[in-house]
Every structure is written in C-alpha cells, then in structure tokens.
Image (cartoon, rainbow, N blue to C red; front, side, top):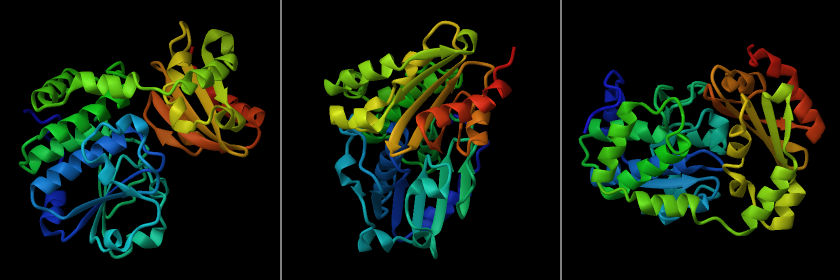
Length: 328
C-alpha cells in the first residue's frame, strides 16, 4: 500500500495514542458515511493495537451504513459514564466543536484530536490534523493506519471505502486522483466488498424516499439564466412521508446534473424556520466561499450551512451572495 500524502506529520498523534488509556472516537451531528466510515475504520485499527476504544455520537448512524462491521457498537445520546472516562477524544470529519453536538465542558481535561479534510475547519482541537487535499476524512484514516503500522483488515477497508465512495459522489469529483484509485484498489484487495457497498448505499432506499423526491422535484426551479438550480423540502413533507433529513441525501445531485447549471442549492427544513442548506458547484464556482459567508463551511465545490427564517428569506439571503461566485 502507498501513502496518499507522505508529508503529513502523524507522529505527534501516534505518540498521544501510545499513551492513551481510553479513547473515545466521536462523529459529527447528523452523521454521514464519511464520518461513520472514518470512525469505524479507526476503531478497528486501534482495537487491533490493543487499545481500549469506545464510539459515541450525539445522533444515530445513517441507515446506509448499517452493513458496516461494528456499527451497532456505536452508542448515541447522552454520554455514559464509561465513555466520559476517556482521556483522549478523536473527532473525525467535524469542522467545528459545535458540530460534535456535545457540551464544551465534556472536552475539558481531555486531549481532543481533530482529524478532518474540510478547509473551513476551525482547528478547535488540542491537536489538529486538517488537510483539504484529502478527498474524504476516511482517506486520512487510511494514511493514519499505515503510520500506525496496523494491517488493513476487511472491516476497516469496507468502512474507508464507504467514506470515500460517498464523499466523492461516487468518484465524480475533481479531488479524485490516480492516488485515490490506487487506494481504492488496496481497499478492495483488503476485503472491501464493492457490490455490498453499492447495494447498501444506493439500492436499499425506502419506497417513501421516492415520494419525497417527487415533492422535491416539484420545487425545482432554474435561475440566473440557467446557471443555478434550486430544490427544497419543507418539514411538513418529511412528516407526511414519515422520513427525515437523511432520506433526502443525494437529492442535490439531481439539481447539479442539469446542463448549464454551475451552482446547485438544496434547502431542507430541519425545524420550524431552521433550514439546512447544501451547496454544490462546478468549476470555477467556489460554493465553499458562499457557505463561509453564510456562516457555514465545506469544500470548494461542496459545502453547506444552516440559515433561519422563512423559505423565501433563506433563498434571498443565498441570492444576495451568489453573484460573488458566479464568474462570467
């Protein structure tokens, strides 16, 4: 196997892990496959080293990750005493401390290690390993496990594959390099089952998802002379279909796939007048800049934020800044 980025200094982290008595690996709120895959891959690797490791998140894991080994070992909700006793906490794929969904006091007196590939990361940890060159945080764990000299087991390989597959939009983004494909070959050789991943992630949706998709597509409109596309889902539609935000993952890809569209926007209502905004851009439209201006973050061509108010007010707030990135 080959390292993706040999210039990343993992040694300070390795030194901390060597001395750790108990490690808590934590994912961000409303976890996706990258954060869960990273969490699970690191969990398996550290367990192979004989470390005492626990996984606990604020929110439950997405159903598309249910096929991954040890996913049921992740606890969630209030932090149990056994987890709170950890002296080292590793946050994966979380751009800010608030994204972990835990009281700040929980991290006091602990070594907090922040591993992430988002350029907008606020470097909130005691130790921060943040590198936007990586296509997914799961790819960072791939490099870390090699530096830890841990053999890549099938369980870790499957988890990293799920992370990379989803965070690269099925290997369609510009950050998918030849090195990424070589890594994927290593993951498959180590036991990642690509057919099982495809079936679990892309071919196991609830039937009601397509009713929700119908409502989302009904909201589709094109703006800026064909350069922007917009989708939305109100909270009452999630309630009507019995679904949640995770069931609309991927809807933005429909808006992004339209010929001539440079920026796609998907807004979904998480709570009354609380909107989760997802942004996707095609080069050179930097939606990461747009998200940061709106109080969020992410990558150059995939980012997001949370906005408040009516649906119309949220759209107008986004439109106010859009001209900054819609280059001629």
